[in-house]
Image: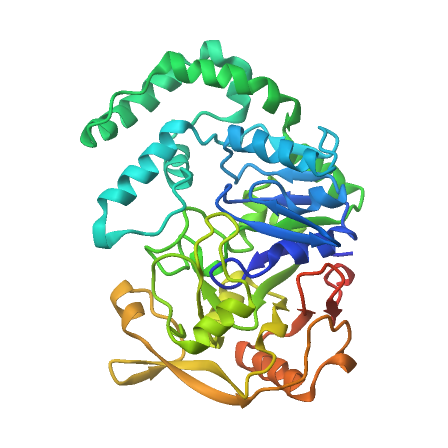
Length: 429
């Protein structure tokens, strides 16, 4: 039986939460391996709606869930999210939730710096969630981060705080902000440590032991490949690697443990925040997609930009992340269109190309080349088998497979957990 890594194949917001939740029923463990609480997942279970941004989606099903070392952890947000889910009847105990003790922490001054930089950037704004994700990753790479394990040794933190404040106080001075209050920070950390530490452990041991016992592990990515710090639309990207290869480094288990890679993609394309978007429809079509798809960010509440499916970008995501199969979500949003367009290539300075360039100016300059397909008037909402889909919808799916050179493994036809067509079981490979 294969382990499965689930990643977003577009700019995030593809519906990963529902798919992970659906797969979690068959998994023995679910692992978040990168990102932070800037990644929103909405789960609809009957009449209950659960909004997660840090906790792995398997937690709602009661599947043992892991926050891996590749995640940056805001301990105060963790507490708030756990308490909110407990209020909705979800049991969260150290038996159900494990946090890597080598996770870097997001601290209050990280959030401050994130917002200060964004406000000062003018036209160069990245469109961050202002939650301190980027600055926390910077401190991790700069070898000055405070980590979960340090919460048990706060009295010994002096040298680490020296490195941390030397860096941040200089930055804060440039924004006319006061130095970090070390004693106040330590007091906040002492207060939150008692909540976080019961969940903390070297999770790499638990994961490798689970693998040795033949347990099924589900690796849950955040954001999407097009937001990857290396392979995304740089600089309008997140601060971590979002590709499937990070599942190993971000959890502490060898790359051979990651089997089937399931890429999640909407049947159209959306993006939150700034950055290029070749197939964007800033018109009635985009408004219709956004309205029907309820396209507002789970974390930020920001309205998502909407456009037709970009097969070039999706093919590129599949290639750089080794995607085995695609889970195509929100097919029902396309119901009722007379015609549907798919971006099949680009035109850059008069030349046609079949890939997305790396240079930011070239990315902004590309023009989408479209192929037009017939739409369908019947509804696909709630379909759970191929037989329930209109012929034109099946033709659309098959054409997408051809264009992205990757098979469709699942089709999601509503936010409901069971409204899913299984074409190929990722855990069976």
